[in-house]
Length: 302
Image (cartoon, rainbow, N blue to C red):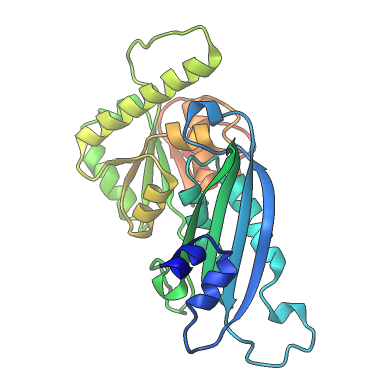
Protein backbone atom coordinates (compact mmCIF):
# COMPACT_ATOMS: atom_id res chain seq x y z
CA UNK A 1 0.00 0.00 0.00
CA UNK A 2 2.84 2.39 0.85
CA UNK A 3 4.36 1.79 -2.58
CA UNK A 4 1.00 2.41 -4.25
CA UNK A 5 0.58 5.74 -2.44
CA UNK A 6 4.12 6.79 -3.30
CA UNK A 7 3.58 6.00 -6.97
CA UNK A 8 0.27 7.85 -6.97
CA UNK A 9 2.15 11.08 -6.25
CA UNK A 10 5.36 10.21 -8.05
CA UNK A 11 6.41 11.81 -11.30
CA UNK A 12 4.69 10.24 -14.34
CA UNK A 13 8.07 8.84 -15.41
CA UNK A 14 8.21 6.66 -12.27
CA UNK A 15 4.67 5.47 -12.93
CA UNK A 16 5.61 4.64 -16.50
CA UNK A 17 8.56 2.56 -15.33
CA UNK A 18 6.52 0.82 -12.63
CA UNK A 19 3.80 -0.19 -15.12
CA UNK A 20 6.11 -1.15 -17.97
CA UNK A 21 5.46 -4.37 -19.84
CA UNK A 22 8.00 -6.94 -20.98
CA UNK A 23 8.14 -5.12 -24.30
CA UNK A 24 10.71 -2.37 -23.67
CA UNK A 25 9.97 1.15 -24.84
CA UNK A 26 11.95 4.34 -24.89
CA UNK A 27 10.61 7.38 -23.06
CA UNK A 28 10.74 11.11 -23.54
CA UNK A 29 9.53 13.54 -20.92
CA UNK A 30 8.59 17.14 -20.25
CA UNK A 31 9.02 18.18 -16.61
CA UNK A 32 7.68 21.18 -14.70
CA UNK A 33 6.51 23.19 -17.71
CA UNK A 34 4.51 26.19 -16.40
CA UNK A 35 2.10 28.20 -18.55
CA UNK A 36 -0.19 31.12 -17.66
CA UNK A 37 -3.68 29.88 -18.59
CA UNK A 38 -7.23 31.24 -18.47
CA UNK A 39 -9.01 28.07 -17.36
CA UNK A 40 -11.66 27.05 -14.86
CA UNK A 41 -15.36 26.35 -14.46
CA UNK A 42 -16.06 29.07 -11.88
CA UNK A 43 -16.91 32.65 -12.78
CA UNK A 44 -14.11 34.00 -10.57
CA UNK A 45 -11.60 32.12 -12.75
CA UNK A 46 -12.72 33.76 -15.98
CA UNK A 47 -10.93 36.71 -17.47
CA UNK A 48 -7.54 36.24 -15.83
CA UNK A 49 -4.77 33.69 -15.97
CA UNK A 50 -3.39 31.29 -13.41
CA UNK A 51 -0.28 29.16 -13.46
CA UNK A 52 -0.73 25.60 -14.73
CA UNK A 53 2.02 22.99 -14.39
CA UNK A 54 2.49 20.28 -17.04
CA UNK A 55 4.40 17.01 -16.67
CA UNK A 56 4.25 14.61 -19.62
CA UNK A 57 5.93 11.29 -20.32
CA UNK A 58 5.59 9.54 -23.67
CA UNK A 59 6.55 5.94 -24.29
CA UNK A 60 7.75 5.68 -27.87
CA UNK A 61 8.35 2.83 -30.27
CA UNK A 62 12.09 2.08 -30.51
CA UNK A 63 13.58 3.32 -33.75
CA UNK A 64 13.57 0.66 -36.46
CA UNK A 65 16.76 2.06 -38.00
CA UNK A 66 19.94 3.77 -36.82
CA UNK A 67 19.16 7.34 -35.79
CA UNK A 68 22.37 8.77 -37.24
CA UNK A 69 21.71 11.85 -35.10
CA UNK A 70 18.74 12.73 -37.38
CA UNK A 71 16.05 14.72 -35.56
CA UNK A 72 13.42 13.68 -38.12
CA UNK A 73 13.58 10.08 -36.90
CA UNK A 74 12.55 10.82 -33.32
CA UNK A 75 9.53 12.24 -31.50
CA UNK A 76 10.73 15.76 -30.80
CA UNK A 77 10.41 17.34 -27.37
CA UNK A 78 8.96 20.34 -29.19
CA UNK A 79 5.97 18.15 -30.04
CA UNK A 80 5.00 18.15 -26.36
CA UNK A 81 5.26 21.89 -25.80
CA UNK A 82 3.58 22.59 -29.14
CA UNK A 83 0.71 20.26 -28.22
CA UNK A 84 0.16 22.28 -25.05
CA UNK A 85 0.30 25.61 -26.89
CA UNK A 86 -2.04 24.39 -29.64
CA UNK A 87 -4.70 23.06 -27.29
CA UNK A 88 -4.60 26.18 -25.11
CA UNK A 89 -5.00 28.38 -28.20
CA UNK A 90 -7.92 26.36 -29.59
CA UNK A 91 -10.49 27.43 -26.98
CA UNK A 92 -10.92 28.35 -23.35
CA UNK A 93 -11.57 25.23 -21.26
CA UNK A 94 -13.33 24.73 -17.95
CA UNK A 95 -11.73 21.44 -16.91
CA UNK A 96 -8.18 20.22 -16.51
CA UNK A 97 -9.58 16.79 -17.40
CA UNK A 98 -10.59 18.04 -20.84
CA UNK A 99 -7.20 19.62 -21.42
CA UNK A 100 -5.38 16.43 -20.38
CA UNK A 101 -7.54 14.29 -22.68
CA UNK A 102 -6.92 16.55 -25.66
CA UNK A 103 -3.18 16.64 -25.02
CA UNK A 104 -3.07 12.85 -24.84
CA UNK A 105 -5.06 12.50 -28.06
CA UNK A 106 -2.85 14.98 -29.92
CA UNK A 107 0.38 13.33 -28.74
CA UNK A 108 -0.85 9.83 -29.57
CA UNK A 109 -1.52 11.01 -33.12
CA UNK A 110 2.26 10.98 -33.57
CA UNK A 111 3.34 7.67 -35.17
CA UNK A 112 6.11 7.01 -32.64
CA UNK A 113 3.94 7.53 -29.54
CA UNK A 114 2.60 4.35 -27.91
CA UNK A 115 1.52 5.44 -24.42
CA UNK A 116 1.34 8.83 -22.73
CA UNK A 117 1.14 10.01 -19.11
CA UNK A 118 -0.22 13.53 -18.70
CA UNK A 119 -0.32 15.38 -15.38
CA UNK A 120 -1.82 18.89 -15.28
CA UNK A 121 -1.94 20.93 -12.06
CA UNK A 122 -3.20 24.36 -10.99
CA UNK A 123 -0.71 26.18 -8.78
CA UNK A 124 -2.60 29.31 -7.68
CA UNK A 125 -5.86 28.04 -6.15
CA UNK A 126 -4.45 27.82 -2.62
CA UNK A 127 -1.44 26.68 -0.58
CA UNK A 128 -1.47 23.41 -2.54
CA UNK A 129 -1.68 22.00 -6.06
CA UNK A 130 -4.88 20.74 -7.63
CA UNK A 131 -4.54 18.49 -10.64
CA UNK A 132 -5.39 15.50 -12.75
CA UNK A 133 -3.28 12.73 -14.22
CA UNK A 134 -4.32 10.41 -17.02
CA UNK A 135 -2.73 7.52 -18.90
CA UNK A 136 -3.72 6.76 -22.46
CA UNK A 137 -2.35 4.28 -24.98
CA UNK A 138 -2.60 3.97 -28.72
CA UNK A 139 -4.66 0.78 -28.37
CA UNK A 140 -7.25 2.72 -26.35
CA UNK A 141 -7.33 5.71 -28.67
CA UNK A 142 -10.71 6.62 -30.14
CA UNK A 143 -11.71 5.12 -33.47
CA UNK A 144 -11.15 7.59 -36.28
CA UNK A 145 -12.53 7.81 -39.80
CA UNK A 146 -10.13 5.83 -41.99
CA UNK A 147 -10.04 6.17 -45.75
CA UNK A 148 -9.39 3.44 -48.30
CA UNK A 149 -5.69 4.21 -48.26
CA UNK A 150 -5.51 3.52 -44.53
CA UNK A 151 -5.05 7.18 -43.63
CA UNK A 152 -7.35 9.19 -41.39
CA UNK A 153 -9.85 10.95 -43.61
CA UNK A 154 -10.51 14.67 -43.18
CA UNK A 155 -14.16 15.56 -42.67
CA UNK A 156 -15.42 18.76 -44.30
CA UNK A 157 -19.04 19.36 -43.28
CA UNK A 158 -21.64 21.52 -44.94
CA UNK A 159 -22.70 24.47 -42.73
CA UNK A 160 -26.13 25.94 -43.44
CA UNK A 161 -27.46 29.18 -41.93
CA UNK A 162 -31.26 29.10 -41.84
CA UNK A 163 -33.45 32.17 -41.71
CA UNK A 164 -36.59 32.04 -39.59
CA UNK A 165 -38.62 31.76 -42.79
CA UNK A 166 -36.59 28.70 -43.80
CA UNK A 167 -37.06 27.13 -40.36
CA UNK A 168 -40.84 27.43 -40.72
CA UNK A 169 -41.01 26.53 -44.42
CA UNK A 170 -43.23 23.60 -45.46
CA UNK A 171 -40.39 22.17 -47.56
CA UNK A 172 -37.86 22.07 -44.69
CA UNK A 173 -37.70 18.26 -44.71
CA UNK A 174 -37.05 18.23 -48.45
CA UNK A 175 -34.22 20.75 -48.04
CA UNK A 176 -32.65 18.61 -45.32
CA UNK A 177 -32.92 15.61 -47.65
CA UNK A 178 -31.12 17.54 -50.37
CA UNK A 179 -28.23 18.59 -48.14
CA UNK A 180 -27.81 15.10 -46.76
CA UNK A 181 -27.80 13.71 -50.29
CA UNK A 182 -24.59 15.64 -50.95
CA UNK A 183 -22.77 13.07 -48.82
CA UNK A 184 -21.41 15.45 -46.20
CA UNK A 185 -22.30 15.90 -42.53
CA UNK A 186 -24.58 18.91 -42.10
CA UNK A 187 -24.31 21.56 -39.38
CA UNK A 188 -27.31 23.89 -39.15
CA UNK A 189 -26.98 27.38 -37.65
CA UNK A 190 -29.82 29.78 -36.89
CA UNK A 191 -30.25 33.43 -35.95
CA UNK A 192 -32.32 35.33 -33.43
CA UNK A 193 -35.99 34.36 -33.13
CA UNK A 194 -38.82 36.69 -34.13
CA UNK A 195 -39.67 37.63 -30.57
CA UNK A 196 -38.86 40.28 -28.01
CA UNK A 197 -35.93 39.55 -25.73
CA UNK A 198 -34.62 41.35 -22.65
CA UNK A 199 -32.43 44.40 -23.22
CA UNK A 200 -29.81 44.80 -20.51
CA UNK A 201 -28.01 47.93 -21.72
CA UNK A 202 -24.76 46.15 -20.90
CA UNK A 203 -22.77 44.57 -23.76
CA UNK A 204 -21.36 41.46 -22.01
CA UNK A 205 -24.69 40.44 -20.49
CA UNK A 206 -26.61 41.34 -23.64
CA UNK A 207 -24.33 39.05 -25.58
CA UNK A 208 -25.30 36.15 -23.33
CA UNK A 209 -28.99 37.00 -23.63
CA UNK A 210 -28.70 37.04 -27.43
CA UNK A 211 -26.79 33.75 -27.52
CA UNK A 212 -29.44 32.10 -25.37
CA UNK A 213 -32.14 33.46 -27.69
CA UNK A 214 -30.34 31.90 -30.66
CA UNK A 215 -30.26 28.60 -28.76
CA UNK A 216 -34.01 28.86 -28.18
CA UNK A 217 -34.39 29.18 -31.95
CA UNK A 218 -32.18 26.10 -32.38
CA UNK A 219 -34.63 24.12 -30.27
CA UNK A 220 -37.50 25.42 -32.41
CA UNK A 221 -35.71 23.95 -35.43
CA UNK A 222 -35.12 20.69 -33.56
CA UNK A 223 -38.88 20.36 -33.07
CA UNK A 224 -39.45 20.53 -36.84
CA UNK A 225 -37.49 17.38 -37.78
CA UNK A 226 -36.04 14.51 -35.67
CA UNK A 227 -32.77 14.67 -37.59
CA UNK A 228 -32.09 18.12 -36.15
CA UNK A 229 -30.19 17.37 -32.92
CA UNK A 230 -29.00 20.36 -30.89
CA UNK A 231 -25.35 20.20 -29.81
CA UNK A 232 -23.18 22.72 -27.97
CA UNK A 233 -19.66 21.35 -27.49
CA UNK A 234 -16.86 20.72 -29.96
CA UNK A 235 -16.63 17.13 -28.73
CA UNK A 236 -20.33 16.49 -29.47
CA UNK A 237 -20.10 18.12 -32.89
CA UNK A 238 -16.92 16.25 -33.86
CA UNK A 239 -18.50 12.96 -32.78
CA UNK A 240 -21.63 13.64 -34.83
CA UNK A 241 -19.97 14.75 -38.05
CA UNK A 242 -17.56 11.81 -38.03
CA UNK A 243 -20.68 9.65 -38.11
CA UNK A 244 -22.38 11.70 -40.79
CA UNK A 245 -25.11 12.98 -38.50
CA UNK A 246 -26.97 16.28 -38.70
CA UNK A 247 -26.27 18.91 -36.02
CA UNK A 248 -28.06 22.09 -34.93
CA UNK A 249 -25.49 24.38 -33.37
CA UNK A 250 -26.15 25.92 -29.95
CA UNK A 251 -23.43 28.60 -30.01
CA UNK A 252 -23.01 29.83 -26.42
CA UNK A 253 -20.28 27.49 -25.22
CA UNK A 254 -18.03 27.55 -28.28
CA UNK A 255 -18.35 31.31 -28.76
CA UNK A 256 -17.81 32.27 -25.11
CA UNK A 257 -14.94 29.81 -24.61
CA UNK A 258 -13.11 30.62 -27.85
CA UNK A 259 -9.65 32.14 -27.52
CA UNK A 260 -10.01 33.70 -30.98
CA UNK A 261 -13.77 33.91 -31.38
CA UNK A 262 -15.99 35.58 -33.99
CA UNK A 263 -15.30 39.28 -34.38
CA UNK A 264 -18.95 40.11 -35.01
CA UNK A 265 -22.01 39.32 -32.92
CA UNK A 266 -24.18 38.94 -36.00
CA UNK A 267 -25.52 35.36 -36.18
CA UNK A 268 -24.44 34.83 -39.80
CA UNK A 269 -20.91 35.98 -38.89
CA UNK A 270 -20.87 33.42 -36.08
CA UNK A 271 -22.02 30.75 -38.55
CA UNK A 272 -19.13 31.69 -40.85
CA UNK A 273 -16.72 31.52 -37.90
CA UNK A 274 -18.00 28.01 -37.14
CA UNK A 275 -17.62 27.00 -40.80
CA UNK A 276 -13.99 28.15 -40.76
CA UNK A 277 -13.37 26.44 -37.42
CA UNK A 278 -14.74 23.15 -38.74
CA UNK A 279 -12.96 23.45 -42.10
CA UNK A 280 -16.34 23.28 -43.82
CA UNK A 281 -16.70 22.59 -47.52
CA UNK A 282 -18.90 25.70 -47.76
CA UNK A 283 -21.47 27.85 -45.98
CA UNK A 284 -24.98 28.09 -47.43
CA UNK A 285 -26.87 31.17 -46.22
CA UNK A 286 -30.65 31.44 -46.37
CA UNK A 287 -32.19 34.86 -46.03
CA UNK A 288 -31.48 38.43 -47.02
CA UNK A 289 -28.56 39.10 -44.68
CA UNK A 290 -25.25 40.90 -45.14
CA UNK A 291 -22.41 38.47 -45.66
CA UNK A 292 -19.08 39.01 -43.88
CA UNK A 293 -16.08 39.86 -46.05
CA UNK A 294 -12.81 37.99 -46.21
CA UNK A 295 -14.09 34.46 -45.74
CA UNK A 296 -11.76 31.47 -45.89
CA UNK A 297 -14.80 29.29 -46.69
CA UNK A 298 -16.88 29.47 -49.87
CA UNK A 299 -20.27 31.10 -49.26
CA UNK A 300 -23.46 30.48 -51.23
CA UNK A 301 -26.46 32.74 -50.56
CA UNK A 302 -29.86 31.41 -51.57
